[in-house]
Length: 406
Image (tube, rainbow, N blue to C red):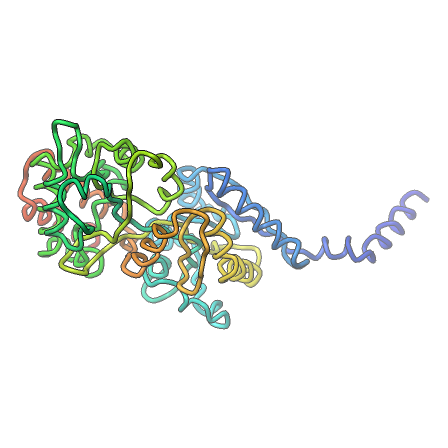
């Protein structure tokens, strides 16, 4: 009797719209490594909203630390234990694509028709051999922040517009008596340091992968000259980007290479000095180069329902959602059709948005970690051992070509 009643109750429940919809939903797991409360809250809000908007898919957002996630992706490519949708740092994506972690979704995205709205730099970080394995979710790049009070004191009435002006201004604004350096950046021997040094090595290295080209040699020679002449702090080789920014905020540096995320930290400067931002003066007049940071979203091998996963990332990376994400987190939209009214330093964001047109992906290549290390070690040898930039980069080029089989 009890068993019969249980079956009757189950039949009634299955006919209930709420229960039947829940039973029919496709369960999709999303991995992310957003640690800050701002970013973590935003991704959870986005997921909750998508779950409310439709009844076919239920997304569960799972936080995993970045390093643990990289390990899980590597192991999961072999074991098959992967999420349905995964986040990845843009320079790491090519490596995981090579392992088979992410699916080729080129054809699946064709009906969406919005891939062309993304800046080339972020989009290229999702591509291998012209095929798309993900979509850029958020982005960032590097620009130059300048202490305008020190700039005026040194006799200049404009920001550096080219490499030669930049070098002259860095020298003129260096004041050893007051512990002020003309320029600071992170030159630490990690990916963070490579990220900051790459723009100065020029478009030859980034775009043409000419690891010992004239542009790279000239750029590294510039950094080495600034370092050895005392226009850069010798501690730059141990500083991360937060350290360099802190020194600028304290007035101990006239110029600093900084990222988009620093714009939400400008309250550390208020009341101390006037400041502004400009494109990185990494080339001749009007020429600039930058690199992108940010995360991509891809669909993992063995996902429960590829069509359902594609539908979600198309929604998450739509114009409206990318705009909302950028506004809520202070990051840059990887889409060129987004107009974001930031509640922060507007002119600063305008400069970063312009720089995004010239920002390029690191790599993209499956061996990027090894390529990055070779480039970084070349820079370290110039700073620490006074190796000639041409020799340092030639040695790095040999290592890189052996690594990638070129």
